[in-house]
Image 1: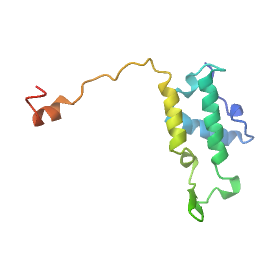
Image 2: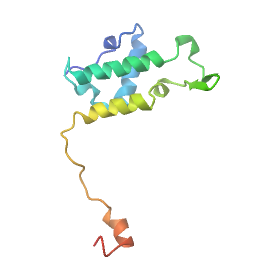
Image 3: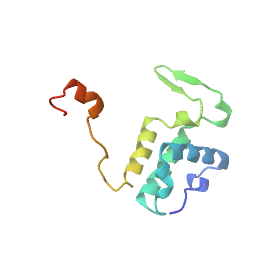
Image 4: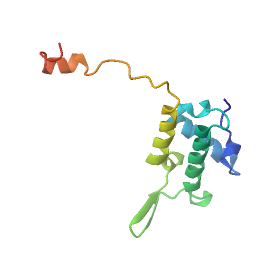
Length: 122
C-alpha cells in the first residue's frame, strides 16, 4: 500500500492537489489503504480528478455564487467542491475495505425504549 500522491491527480498545481487529498482523507480515511494498481485506488483517483475539474478557476476564487437562468453554483472553498456524490462515493469505497462485520451493540437502546414499552423490551 502506497499513499496516493499529488502527481497522480494529474494537475500542475501541487498545492491544490495536496489540499484536495487532505480534504478527501478527512471524508474517507481509508483512501491510502488500497493497493497500487487496484480498482479501488483507480476509482479514488478518478473521483478526485472529477472534484478538481469542478473547482473554480484560480481567478474566480472569491466567487461565492454564479447563476445562469435556473442553474446556480456556489464555491467557497475546497470542501464545497466535494458534493454529495463525491463524498458518498469516497465513503462507499471505504466500506469496501471492511471485513463485512455487522454493527456491534444492541438496538433499540434499552435505556430509553424499554421505558416506553417495558413489556416488549424487558
